[in-house]
Image (cartoon, rainbow, N blue to C red; front, side):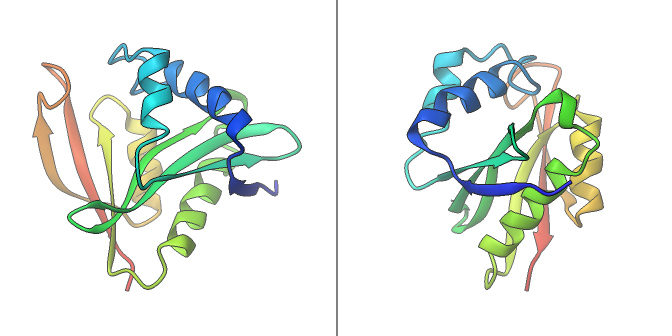
Length: 148
């Protein structure tokens, strides 16, 4: 399946926020729709929508989001498109956007093994653990990929 990934139009921000709010980790953490809307407008970040004739998902990128290095702040895929390479396409897109950078970073929740496996397949490795970072009983794993 081929995915078109492009900057999200203003009208797509609400769809992306709704997708975010109904999926993990944001669902488990009980983040509100309003919180999701705010995150997608994080200053300095860029929201990209993925589609395959219909909206599929989104990726939120920040070129200097972690210690001055590129950071994948959020990635979400509609349930019906999981396992069909949408997440992989967005990670490849991010890699191309971050070309010329030394590393890229992201965080993944300890209770999200499917996302962890996706990131590991794309060369991200765990470099740290933030226990009880967002909520007691859960950890966030900081992951890094060497780009160049």
